[in-house]
Image (tube, rainbow, N blue to C red; front, top):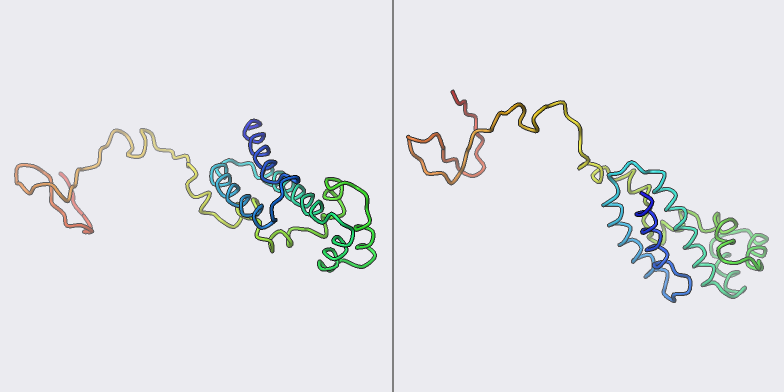
Length: 185
């Protein structure tokens, strides 16, 4: 739904605001808390492409945040070298005068890829859907039964573990945890 997609993007914008000074660990902790709740609610929809799009957009925003945090050229040199990028590429990236959003969209995509964000602790929406089938376990299934779960007007017999034992009624007192096998004429 376009409205809910707009709402989630707005919330993610506030959580990944480049001008809000907070550590990346704190930012990822807040994002993970929000994403867990969001995926728990929207996992029942068949919108895997939407989850993939949101995840890519979110990682680009986070790359822009990292680039803005590495404000000085010498900080960019140090951090890019630590990621194991070749020296010539480090020189080109660190001395680039492009803005954070432009850098996050292309050149930094390889340097700060999925493995980097997994190591930082960021939850992946697509991996959560793929690896956690219990999210999808409560999905409603169609049945061919008419009349609901019990079938065509049938009612289940009444068994209570607290019912008084009497011969006049058909109620039977059953100890807790006992298995019933009873046929009613």
